[in-house]
Image (cartoon, rainbow, N blue to C red):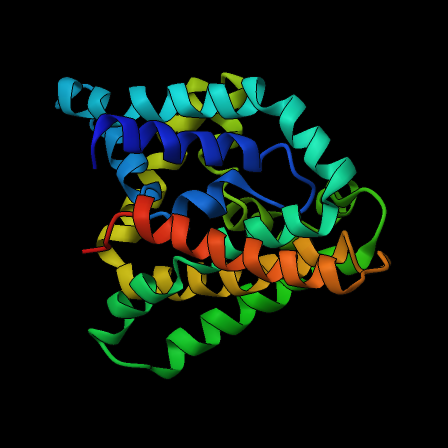
Length: 236
């Protein structure tokens, strides 16, 4: 993936962190750059230049998306709420085919399906609590752990907060999972990706729509999928 392409991925990841119900980490997974960011963080000392080639453009993109595009996103929310949510739903679901290719290598096993179900149910049920999700997460330790992993805060949260030690510790943990339990990890990722639209669409469940909104919403959804196919990296 070229430098500009990585910046574009970073911009979408940064913008995703502005939207209610959307996670930049989940979007990074869908675009196929999450594991590469993890690798770059854990190997930054041994492979500094190579790590910098990944982290710098993605980081620039995240900053641009998070800060520079905040006003545009705010306007889109005011004028095109449904379409904006469906655009990011498409961005997230667009990465599913590449993840399925990884899973199909070892076949569809019961353990993987079980992990998928656990991640899907816990992630999908969080929006049903209502109110402040962070408060709920703090009260329920198991859901907290799954939610942190599911929305990508394991990497992007500590990084944003400047907790460098946390970034390296958690990045190494995730790299361990990718290296030694790759298929099971991807089953969990698949569960959270399928569940993510529940949180996104719950934000617009009470919003009245007309034919124009439905039509443009579908177009935005398809456009999101196409963006991921163009920007995303194939899993290996």
